[in-house]
Amino acid sequence: MPQDNIPSSDDMKNTENQPIAMDMADDDNSSPVEDQIPETVDETDCMNIEDEWLEESDFVEKPAVNFSGFTRKEIVERLRGLLERLEIDTIREEIDEMKYQFYRKLKAEEELKRAVYIENGGVEDSYLYEEDEQELVLKTLMLRYRDIRNVISEKQEVEKQKNLEEKLRIIDELKELTNSSESIGETFQQFRDLQNRWRAIGLVPQTKVKNLWDTYHHYVEVFYDYIKINKELRDLDFKRNLEMKIELCEKAEALLLETSVVTAFRTLQTYHDQWREIGPVPKEMRVEIWERFKAISTQVNKKHQDHFEQLKETHKKNKDAKEALCARVEEILQQPIPSPSEWRKNTQEIVEMQKLWNTIGHTGKKDNRKLYKRFHTLCDKFFNQKREFTGLEREKQENNLQLKQDICVQAEALKDSTEWRATTDEIIQLQNKWKEIGNVPSKHHEAIWKRFRSACDYFFEQKAKYYSSIESEYDINLRTKRELIMQIRNFKHSDNPEESFEQLKEFQRQWSAIGHVPHRYMKKVQDDYRRAISKQFDALRMDDSERDRLQFRNRIETMASSPQSRVKLAFERNKMMYRFQELQNDLVVWENNIGFFSKSKKTEALVANVQNMIEQGKVEMKELEQKIKLIDSLENK
Image (cartoon, rainbow, N blue to C red; front, side):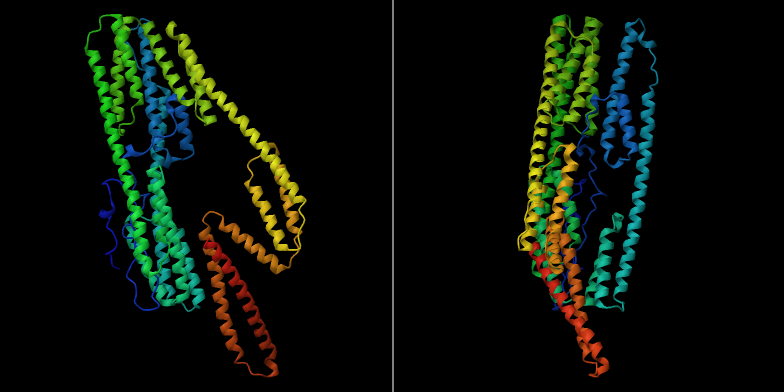
């Protein structure tokens, strides 16, 4: 198979360590004869995004849960619950954050115990660290987490090997199809079944992907040569495949408007998988449609690369800013501080730098924790020196003030949230933490309390307004649904059954468009609606063939409005085309057989029976033609 039009992996990769969406070009090596077989898709550069993902863990978004407000026991219980649910593939970053917050809190608690020990007359050098029970539990759970990840990884590799063996068996069955003694129709159905089985099988080892796909497509081409599928059906397949690939191109182009480049990149991998599964297109469109898809893939990949290049640059700027703050704290510590006014001045500067630190973004996993430890160690050293200068109690009050200011900042950040349940829990946790914190200097007591209370009150007022509006909307929906039920009950059928049928469908669409109702009325109003609409459908007056036609039309239109409508409609159409061709073959056989019968009285009954079969077959073929036209009209909308 020629590879001139297929880009290499080096051409398509934009970074050394980051995977991108790889191109999969249509093979342009086609036969010059009239009945040439469909082209295949070359999988040379197809990469499995699940096997190669971002190696820079700095680029993975932080977990959505904020564990800074959790107690250590809550963190341990959260980890235990995640492991019990075996949500291993999605919790790595969350577990790292939990572990980090756990030891941060453990250190803070230990420092407080040491300070209390010294305040009560103990000697600092004689203070002994007591082994923490929660820390032991955490370590045990982390060992369990590692073991589970190893087991899952081994299981995935075993599953991939099984998938490889299954696909090799399918290839062997494809080889045997060309030796089949069955009819073309039966052999072609076996071929379609093998294709469906192939698509349903999951991932295989990455090293086997290219050779496996090359072998598979080779025997697909051999099969098409063998059966010499008729040109009309092939051209229809080519047309449908072109439409599906154009739709994929349009979807890929829409990814340029996606705000998340990571989401766009991952979605593009799915589109490349779908492209590979779609069959060939007309020869004159092969290069054009592939170049269009490849061009948009390049743009999405470029945005993906640029995003992470910008992220690296942002991390560098954040690192420089945090190092500058650390250097300033070190400078303050090196200067003598002789008076209380100087202590207050430097304390305010340190507090402002802590606030500024919290506004600076991530610096990358490699540097973030190291800088955090450096900065907070310096700040701790400063406040320890201040404590020696001003006295422990006063320092406690100042520290309490800082803690309450931090809580105010968190509450103010949450007050505009519309995640009502989760935010309510977080604010209640903040209120509990507020109660646990001791007194602050008297001159700040009233102001800090008003600030915190104002943020909390604002959130709960907005929450109350929201739920009040929701209840009002549900009541309106309930009245609307009851009115629609009365319309259905009072509906009078016209002389035209099809017209009545369409009106009943309109009632169904109106019902689906109405939103939720209060939960206590949900079951009753749903039951009333079902009884009313079922009664009206039962009252339709039409013969069986007309009812069957309307029911088929209703089913196809419903299918056309459902997710993956094109795939479902194509499957329905292929099933009818297969039946149509089967009847064509049968009619040829039946009509030929009549000519062999002698015109004696002994064969008259047999001839009449065959003639009846021919007439019924023609009627069924006509019905199939009408249904196929209906499907085609919906596919082209």
